[in-house]
Image (cartoon, rainbow, N blue to C red; front, side, top):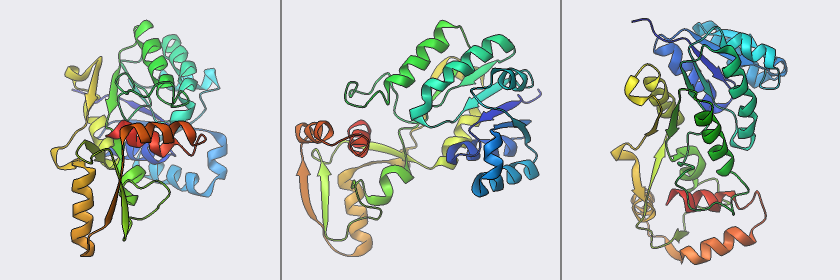
Length: 269
């Protein structure tokens, strides 16, 4: 069976680049929709060259340009969107173009985090998750074949600081534990999310389903993560505990977007 032709939107971003590379590595004919401005950005242009050299077809266009979108969509079977979460509603234009093109067999919208239909923080997240919910409902209302990918959290978002907002590296003296530290979260690498996503593209079992990436070896509680870090640095950290109620207060009292790390922590655990 011929492999589906895959279009990546957001291929110059972190996850988008890994998605494009994973698609190429899986022998899918791979296309990347890229803005004109990306060619003037040194980092993005380097990614474009890398993808092109690896075999991807580079198409110029954007979510705001319906003509370029439809032309790109008519060349492929599957479209994967990897734009930033704050731009999630821009996918309304993409959904409209998918309907016009009439050729897309599967749409994977920009999610790749906690399941927006299941998080319990609506109303305090400045529509971070509700925008994704709106896109889901629109996809379903339009009858577009789809797959939703939920992987909880990238390692680069929380794990590099041992889940300590404001820090870029793990603490060496004191650590804040949110809740009792026993709830478990899932942390995954972008490369693994990309490979998992691409593996669903031609799998009929994943069509119109929510797919969860939860490798058993990537599921840890804050207490477990702290103990692992303590064993590496050879010392015990002083623990401070913040209850769920205190965390919710912190979310409400901390200005946006500075409160987003606390929102992610509440969602993860």
